[in-house]
Image (tube, rainbow, N blue to C red; front, side, top):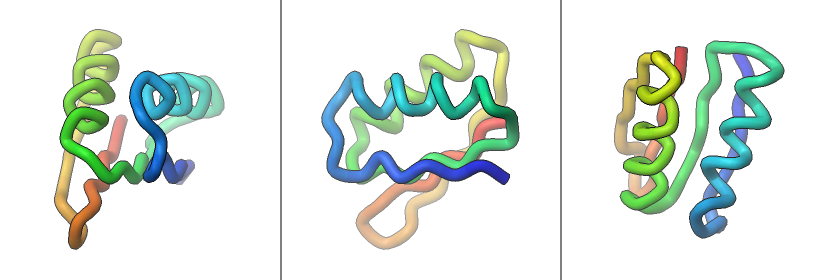
Length: 66
């Protein structure tokens, strides 16, 4: 499984990182540290007909995109 760590980046960088990583394959796990990134990545993925699961891990969020 591919994984990227987008914690510490402000939008739109986490979405751009996600887009580049998805070009290499799925499933993809994305770590982010804010709700705005969760919303933007979810919107991007669902707009491309991908499923997104999100879970909170401590203060961070883990999104799995398939």
